[in-house]
Image: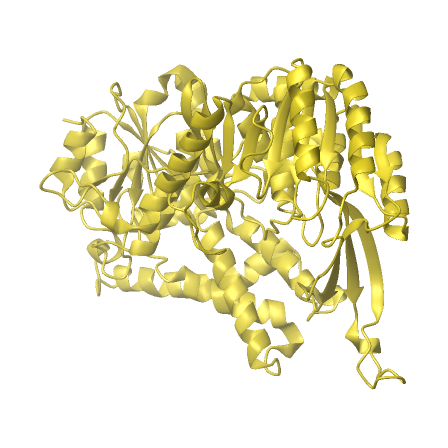
Length: 633
């Protein structure tokens, strides 16, 4: 989505008139601090002392809270609550959001207000207690609620139908009654998120996740089993064929499939570096979709907006988060996407240029004329810093554990190692300073190091750089003494590739997350600095200015965004690949084995395909074939 259109939608959704009917509930989080635990006098069982608590709207309530947070000013709730404290709390929270609660009915018997009670022990969610799973809606409540919906629907643009519980509001009588109202009030766009109701509400647009969609179509997958794209697409198409109304099938980190009268649309997933918590992400997605449909957006636009909304909320841990207009805009204006995850994860699907090891991940654009080539440095050209991950990982583990590095138990130690390794894998290619900023956050969250002893990002970067530069300086000295030559620290045919491009009149740019002065010195040591003619860029001390993004912005500033077809980027990390894809350039993922300096490294292949590589090469050994594909003579 173009930034201008996103800005229009962010502003427009405030004027939407949205109603939400369904299973409203309360998510209650209780922070347990076992340091104050003691055996109960009555039972002898250890108590769970509560240090803190928070209560948030969940289910249909979380959809409503998300709509309010994104700026929707006209909201109406239609729900059933019980005569209990949880119901009272829910009404107070809805009133605080300015929600019209004329459609909320209290049923005196056989009804508890839906609630999820979530104890948090040692920062992890423990066994959950669910209230309301045995509810039975009465005929009188159904009649009353349908009457209030009938009166309210003429004043709404969109009605969201939410169903979470098998036993709750959505009795057969309520389903048939609401469907009759939707046929009566054709001015209202209804969109349903119903976990287990395939036949209900045929007049409503459907939004469901891939597990729900395939289950409704007779194919059951395990709760943690990934759903193949083809299976999700087939299910979406079958559901669309039943109603001829738009269908939204969410696929978690793989984005969303949309089928409407114009065909199938694929909204890619978002690449998010931070730790995530997917609780409530579906509600956020639903809120974004519904609000956009209410103001006339197309289904693909609505899905993209909803994707941004969910992308904000999954970064809010241990809470059913919401997304503000500013947060949606900040994420969406420069979003990072995940491409072709199934191809990335399954090398059996690889398709190669005949007679080569060059993987063709996507068809190349029909028209392109390469005049500018951007190179990442480490792992793409140079292997001087090979093994940097093995320097950073133990440094991060030691920083996180701090004074408990030697005494931490095996489980704690392994958990920190796993956390550091996952973070490094997610952040490969970004500025070192940004990585160290993330490390400072991890140190603070882990709680092993006193606050007064936690360093800032620059301090952690100095520790890491000192350790890494010992390795680099040793290798540079070996070069200077003639013990090794430049071929020992560059990928196969890297220097001939640079020379061929330079001779063809292609302007070369070198962009690295390493400090600028170090990049220049290393390029000189390896004998190709002059080929870049001064166009060598490294990281600054300002995290707001990423070297690779800066180079792309500078080039496009020189040649104009309309000429993105003149750019090719070579990289072994996600940043340079993603930034080029955003701008419409051609991308060559380099899945290099830095130890051997030739051959494929499978983890890198996965990484660069997910980032959007058009081609993947293990090295530049098949130089002539690669240049022919790039139309370089």
